[in-house]
Image (tube, rainbow, N blue to C red):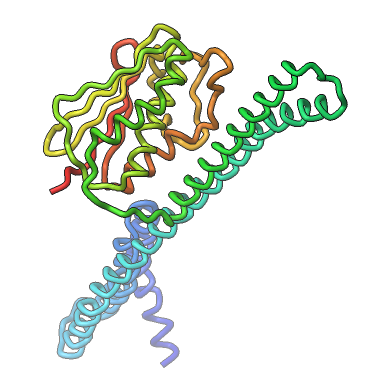
Length: 339
């Protein structure tokens, strides 16, 4: 028996080795392409190699025993190959999902680190000013009534700025954590835009920016009034901040393709093309190419306003986009119309 095995071993190896090597080459080629195909090859190669080895050793002399053996190989292939394909698809889907989940986690962690860095820097500036002015008042360095009132006014303004930043952080945390709950109802855009324009009007006037609102029609949208008001105010505040004196910020309202359409045009001088896709990112403020704000009435924000606006619009099943238009930028918001 051992002698017979030693006699047929070279023939078996000679026939099975090329099939095995071909399988190795196929697996290397499919390694970065298709997991289901790789598993199918992994199942088929041993079966084919064994079948070819059996045929080679038998001298291709077909008889009842050889036919039975080959039939068994065929049935094993019929059962195992579909199972390998299904298993490969399941593993591939899970692998892709895990890879995407890890990528999302890395992006979220990077965004959190960036946000903490930006906010830490932004909080430090008004806090340092408040502390310096408070120490000056406490030490009697400032004693004239007019100067005391001026310092108190500036402390109040810086405190309001800090309060706004904390509110923005709280709102953004609700959005990113999926904890935002909207009370949906029919909301007239006329009321939302009118209130936002009235609230931001004094800021625009103090900077010498013209603020106007126009409408082809005033649609009624399905949404939450406070959150929609925040979207419009954030867009207006951003536009006013980046529009130079004597510039114009225009709000245009209408309908398009069965949706409510709200546009905010500014005169910021435009955004570099490579930054347009990032204007809604957390803590993104753009390059110095964009017209900076002037004066101390409206200091630069923490880079959260547009990120919050995007989160709130998407929570309304709407869309928001930005592109260069005329002397500046145009921010477009599309919202579902109330039925």
